[in-house]
Image (cartoon, rainbow, N blue to C red; front, side, top):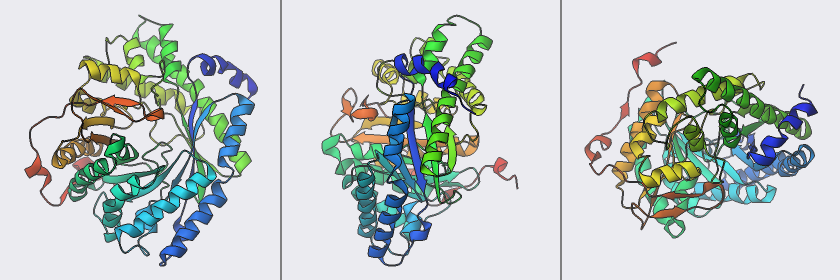
Length: 454
């Protein structure tokens, strides 16, 4: 039972250290909406989402007012649309019509984003999967709050390199279609290896087919809280450092558990998971990079950064696991460049490079997240970067991802502006040497030997 004393204990965190619940995400299964008629399918999708989520925003705002806990975003995730639209969609435009239905319905219920315009192709693409993937540039350029994700690999199946190569082209096309907004469409598109079914964070959220009909997943945050706690033990040994992070993560996660329980009770929707991730924002004092600096680094990216991030990620999970009934999603520390002022500063002065970020993704929650790169980067190079990140996830049996933004018309040293929680990012240099002959090979990279554990 969570009492009011635990809520009162977090008041200082909320008022002074940017503690918030980053999102309540309602996951909605659309499997019972499948229809061979496109008009009927879109009607069923609209009706089910509206019926399930019509009170989501109001309920989140009520909980926020009553408990004094900021709940920044209210979101929806749905069953991967490649599965839902397979029977009805004959062209890419048919899939785009579903995307517009999702966008319209999400706006009607008032959420910030809707995720699930997705395909799961870790072992191969069905015709519907490929059609949805090819529709992504048009869908993301003609909708406002729909987010898209594609799972390209897994530890069990390997990496679908045909899909990886295709996504290099799709990302460039999406960038071109939204170039007047600094290629903003790519900020709503992420590719995964080992994508979780219950992730509440965008752009990668979708409602997995293993989930129930409707569930609530909560994403907590609090980098500012962790940094403030570490300031009180500056110069202490590693045991003290770890204990401080762990205890702070416990308190932060209890806030998420409270919100999860209350939202579940009021909406009469089962509670799914709390995602423990430390998710930064562009606000000063709400940075994962600042935590790493508080541990003793001059800038994120300095020697020791990967070790510091590994420590942080592990202690966040250890502290949070005891604070919630169910933990899932990604859970750990996000390191998006554009959404973290400390990461932005480190990238600008050259302390943080694409290669160092790739090394850091071996121990963090996600991967190369919100990375702005030159707009003239070849689509084969983008595919190569994706392949590297997918390999890290496959071999290390963890989730990894890429949200790369080739900003059309801009180059290294310039800045891309995305606004809001997505912030802004310096354009980072990319290795100039070609990988075209490698990524243009057909087929699949096999699963690693340690995947055979049945």
